[in-house]
View 1 (tube, helix red, strand yellow):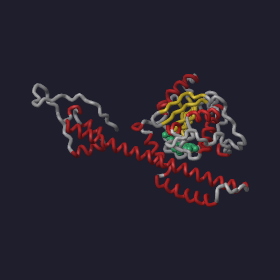
View 2 (cartoon, rainbow, N blue to C red; view 1 turned 90 degrees about the vertical axis):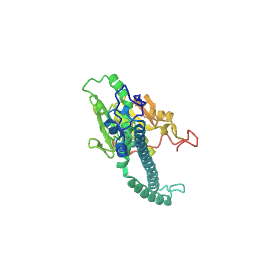
View 3 (cartoon, rainbow, N blue to C red; view 1 turned 30 degrees about the vertical axis):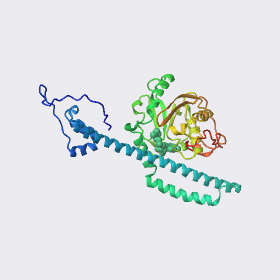
View 4 (cartoon, protein in one colour; view 1 turned 60 degrees about the vertical axis):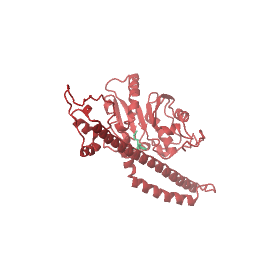
Amino acid sequence: MAVKRTKRKNTPVTASGAGRQQPVIPTITSAAAAAAAADPLSLLKSLTRPDTLTTSATSSLLAVTSSKAVARKKSSLATAQLIRRYHTLNKELSKCLARIDAKKKQSDSGLDTQKSVTSEQTAADLARIVEIRQEMDDLGGLDMYQKASTLGQSKQRGGDSSKWLIPILEDYHRQLGKKAGTPLRLLDIGALSPHNYQKQSSWIHTTPIDLNPQDPLITKMDFLEMPVPKDQEHLFNVVCLSLVVNFVGDPTQRGEILRYSARFLVPGTGILYLVLPLPCIQNSRYFDHELLLEMMTSLGYTTLVNHHFAKKLAYYAFRLDAAAPKEQKRHSSMARTNIAAPMFPKKLRHDKPNRNK
Ligand SMILES: C[S@@+](CC[C@H](N)C(=O)[O-])C[C@H]1O[C@@H](n2cnc3c(N)ncnc32)[C@H](O)[C@@H]1O
């Protein structure tokens, strides 16, 4: 727990202490300091009056607290590194798999040309996939990635991303005129915790799903395999995609998730909550805020209800104004059955060397 270094008014103590009751001056032994490294707040509480600390005791306490802060900073850096590495591996894995898939399609269609994926490339991709999977396993797999992400959601590190959405949903709930007893239906895709909207449970009913649930209250489900609700009353008022789209390695599947989300929302009022790492919006050569709005408009998300750029994350709330566009040649109610050609091919928008690819 963080201890703020607030300036205290130290009680002045004269050399003789004459005329005033002498304060009890606690001293901090090295053993106590070591114990404080584990729990600086409990040390603080154990002192009768923290404002009576001697200068040396105060500075050793601050040193202890700051070493704890350094340790926390280091662990937060390690968590961020693990998350970043996992994303990089996931993206590379998707690229290898996509090339292998393309090769298979080429062979099946008999269009194996000079320009197509070579057998050498396929062999190299297969070898690389083995290495990537091994490294992912060594890192602890999806499970460890999720635990690291959960740590990133801790209050100490800014809390979970549902905080930004709540006031927007309060307004939305009022506008819908939902009376007590008819809560908003919210689908939380890629939920690390089932309790993100617990305080609002009287007016938000959450359905949390994830590929690898970290809690028994989260349903194990791949969103792209989730059947589309058959009737209006099973549609959702809110769909949350917080840090999920960027998690997916394959760009086509990222688009597919966004497109599929519209089929779960009430047309005309449904809200899509999208959270992305800020660099995806502000530091990419191929992507930016305007392109995101264009893409979302093409999916029926024509109203940007609100958005906010924080230090690390970009928050968006879109409204599904039109009915979700129907996909062509769809053979079942599930998303994976038909991946359409990209409507937005990769195009350079910001030709700056320091921007990411
Ligand atoms: C970075 S975590 C985000 C967690 C949380 N929503 C947050 O805002 O911190 C990404 C999560 O998305 C989940 N996920 C990715 N693709 C998914 C899919 N197709 N269906 C369900 N969950 C998915 C992953 O399993 C992972 O737990």
